[in-house]
Image (cartoon, rainbow, N blue to C red):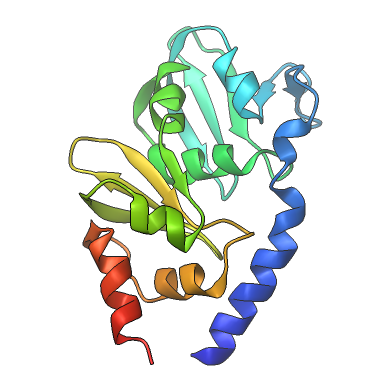
Length: 186
């Protein structure tokens, strides 16, 4: 298990290079395979997209292909895209479901980020289910539909080791679960 934790640390350091993907140009990209299909890969692009309702037709690790009621196809996310967009695609979008854009992203993007032990200890008390586990972060959803993320590529071992102890789908009380984990740790 310690080997996995060390590999996780290495992945987090390597992932740090892509955490500033939001700094890419704000013009909406066109996919190389289909120049007519817009690709919204940054938070700013999604926030600025035309209002529409669209159904998720296909999801991949970093992106989703959607279709509007009038047949227009577009993608959200990309392997070159922003980490916040990856989180949104992985956790908030489900194949076959219809969403209103950009409202669905704005609701998700309003979530808080807690990257340090100090931030986690100071977070407001809540119960939340673990929705997604990444190499150095986890995304949670509260019963009232609010999202938050713990950890990022710059987080220290006290954060990502805690995240490695959690189970997908399980509900936790915060910040209590974090504090209890560190009380029990040798």
